[in-house]
Image (cartoon, rainbow, N blue to C red; front, top):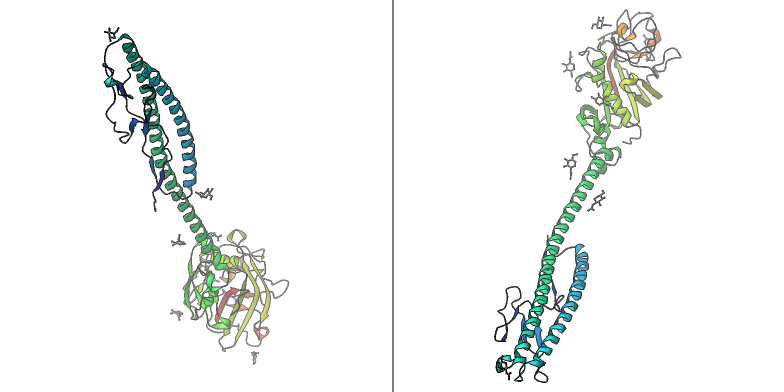
Length: 444
Ligand SMILES: *[C@@H]1O[C@H](CO)[C@@H](O)[C@H](O)[C@H]1NC(C)=O
Ligand SMILES: *[C@@H]1O[C@H](CO)[C@@H](O)[C@H](O)[C@H]1NC(C)=O
Ligand SMILES: *[C@@H]1O[C@H](CO)[C@@H](O)[C@H](O)[C@H]1NC(C)=O
Ligand SMILES: *[C@@H]1O[C@H](CO)[C@@H](O)[C@H](O)[C@H]1NC(C)=O
Ligand SMILES: *[C@@H]1O[C@H](CO)[C@@H](O)[C@H](O)[C@H]1NC(C)=O
Ligand SMILES: *[C@@H]1O[C@H](CO)[C@@H](O)[C@H](O)[C@H]1NC(C)=O
Ligand SMILES: *[C@@H]1O[C@H](CO)[C@@H](O)[C@H](O)[C@H]1NC(C)=O
């Protein structure tokens, strides 16, 4: 903190500051006592001639009072006000002291009329010798001691004021420091608040300059990432960061992978807890996890894209403009609509087979619409079963067409599906399945 010493001169210069005691010795000798420590420069000297050889005015010279104050930004004004008050006090004191000096002068004057005739206040020249002189000297002694008392009082008051001034300057310094510290603390808290606001809100904006914590793969795309791979995302800063596989190359990129089947290496006949938390390896086959899918679809309006490929190398897709998975309390209920694509809208196959608004069911948790059994258990899969299904992308991975219970990966609107039973009685198998999501307002 920069400090400039502000010197206030002469503010109190007019204070009657005659701090020395005045004594008259037994022989009537009037003299100035030795100069005291507090006011070394006070001078008292005769001023002019004694009138009528009796009136002998004295002049008292006081040194200017110098007060040193620290620089204080806004406190300076306040301090100046206090100084003004102090000045007023001093002025009053001064007038009191002037009165007291007048009294003293009058006393001197009166006394000196009765003292000898030789020269000003130089009573030493008086000859000793008569009754009236003795009375006069005693009178002088009384007057002078009264004056000394008055002056002593004045000195006491002035010392008190001096102390107050010192204290004031200390206090001001302390106050100013406290104020600066508090300001700095305020600024720090504001900065950290802004910081928090930024880290939680800025990623919602789709501008690269504002993305601090990528919320999903599209943020990495916006930031210039163009390579498929595993990235860290934070859909909700309050609920942690996790890794996902991002498809940055297909269909404009920015896709967050939710599910993938590529070679049947992973068992999808799993418990509620497994589906909740996710399983598998994001590089290969996996289910991202219902909690994470919920977080992702809760944070932003998401589009779902489903990619299917059969063992004949036929690839088709289904795209839904709206995809939302509720939280666990609502049994991860599916909301899906706005189909477009080539694979057909198998999620809304018919009135009796419609996966929209259906709860999630696993072999160990029956939330489906089938009254006398668990579709998840029957098909060995976790899915938004109706009663039971026109689509099930978490079915068993068959490496080729199969016969029997239709527990494989299923998409009811796949081409040729109506010929599934005839003439071969074989069921369709899929080589690859991908489920991926991207913000609805994303523009590649
Ligand atoms: C003057 O006073 C002294 C005592 O201070 C006394 O001795 C002397 O007698 C007085 N003179 C006269 C004339 O009374
Ligand atoms: C610090 O901020 C609070 C409110 O955030 C305010 O009430 C207080 O006056 C501020 N302190 C200073 C020294 O600015
Ligand atoms: C802002 O927040 C981040 C973590 O969210 C922290 O690492 C960083 O130190 C903070 N910056 C300031 C100036 O508080
Ligand atoms: C946040 O994460 C915890 C643990 O993964 C989970 O229990 C909780 O439900 C999540 N909260 C939300 C809002 O998804
Ligand atoms: C399946 O694919 C994953 C990832 O590419 C690979 O690690 C794994 O070995 C494959 N398993 C089989 C049985 O092909
Ligand atoms: C799923 O796994 C359970 C054992 O965990 C098994 O009893 C059941 O038959 C399996 N379902 C299917 C369709 O494979
Ligand atoms: C399946 O459909 C394709 C055209 O998508 C057709 O060429 C093929 O003959 C059909 N297969 C059967 C078994 O119907």
